[in-house]
Length: 153
Image 1 (cartoon, rainbow, N blue to C red):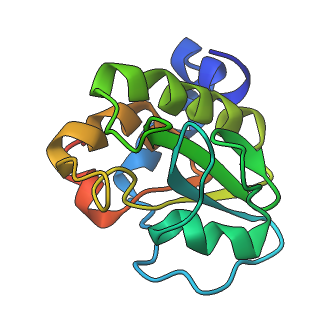
Image 2 (image 1 turned 30 degrees about the vertical axis):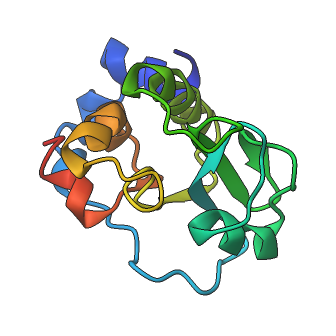
């Protein structure tokens, strides 16, 4: 861990923001535009073939076809499928989510709007994917889907 999240776990963050995660930051259900400092966080495949769902929507905000992970324009891709469009096991998705949380902690000037990653075309259940974002609840610049919150509080 690094940046803001590392500080959060060491305690300096909680000295002034002890209960900030109770103020749930909820991603809008249908994102049609982004402000200059907002980042659309979506589920991808490892090959970056952004052809359907939120991945396809991400193309209008700078997602790069062929890039399956990380920051791309005003988007951030988290793979939930492999290059053959097979759903990744949760333990293989987790490192991508952890990298995202570290990135969000280091870029607190940006607002990250996390979509319901993995629960659409990948078919994962909210109760399985949401806990991966548990540490994101400590970052005031990360908004999560309402359906994720009940599994991480």
